[in-house]
Length: 614
Image (cartoon, rainbow, N blue to C red; front, side, top):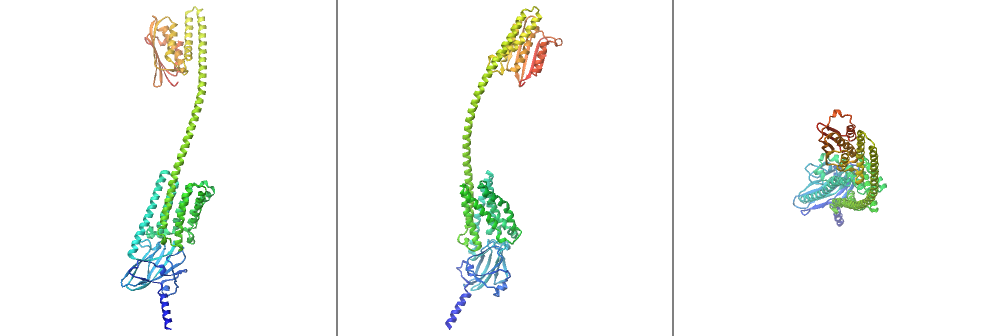
């Protein structure tokens, strides 16, 4: 009988003290949850008095981490007992291993009715640790029972309790924050790198990717707790958390814009249309969670659908041999494993942080690097396409150049033939005109021989010289290849010789010719010159001797024709009815549209100035 009592007492003692965690000086770290008991208060009406009076029934936890997902509608109580088995006072740090739990209350036997408040909504200004922590002091051989009450609004509720020796904890915390700083530094560098490329290329894919990285940085700063203690003032935490749906959705929306642009989704019309429509309605769907708390646990459903749609597009683009899609597919694999790890941890199925520390951060950096490599490859591919297009363009340009050269040569030959034919026709025409005028002159000569009146003969001579002035021009055009301009010196010399032969006087004619004349201007100048030289021979030299100077020069895009004789001059008032002078004035002012200046005092100097563009 005594044996049974002893066995029963041992069993009872082992049950009562089974959850007691015995501590000594070598105890540096414990996962406390497996040594704890847990109770879920679904009605949220349990208070510490109920717990102390055993009105609730705790169950053994038996796990290192328990996850309840996002925004569960209940409170979780955790009970654990610690015993100091040494003769020294022990100082421990209790870490609640989740930075996102909004409300945590720590009940110590020393102050059981005044719990220490912690959690996302109760961050103290002097707190420098990412996760909530509580101080525990155990006197020599002392045993105490502690209680933790946790709940979460909007954010995920994960229960994980770590018991640290204080110095070890702060060493771990410094290392942890350094690792997170390296992660965020790497992400910022990648963002700046792609932002500079965007400014250089103006390719929107880079801008969307920078937006995606910025969204990931903001989300992860809050998710791991860095922003909560270093960036966001505690009084604004509540407001920020209310926008949790947007904080999660923004990088996904940026990723959708990036994927659409990067893969040129327009080449897949059906998927592109679906994606475009969903991108349009996505902000409105996400905004639903800003106005109601009823569906907080489902707030990521639209984000997950977007990711699923982007995955389908990427897989389909890979199937269609889209080179850029291969990079995205590999990045998607990394992203999905990281997201799955975070989800499994939040639900308590698998604690990725314990088994693979910093796996999520490493995955996000790796994904960002893969996408950056994809963008760099895009530049390389665009450069290759550009070089190929340039080569093709140069080839086409060379072919087109050769074709044009051939065409120009063909047209040139045709034009040359036509020009030669036209030149021959013009020469023949000038020859015929010259012959016809010579015939007219010959007929006038025959008629002149029968005239006895000297004044009438002089009239006929003047007519002959006028006709010859035009005839000589056609004679010159017939002799030369250039049918646009005429040699003014040769033309004026022929005219002067023709007039000189008509009169028996010793007159010296000097030429100062420094320009060529167009045919249309040469004919008028020839007629003017014929009239003025004829007048000089008739009236300027009564003694039969004298000098005539003829000059033609081009100045400032204008021609200046000057005829000068050193004869006796004449009175302009008594010569207004002269047909020759009327002809000269008409040709100079109306045909050449020039200015006529006559000086006839003791000599005759006639100057005509007109524009070369007439």
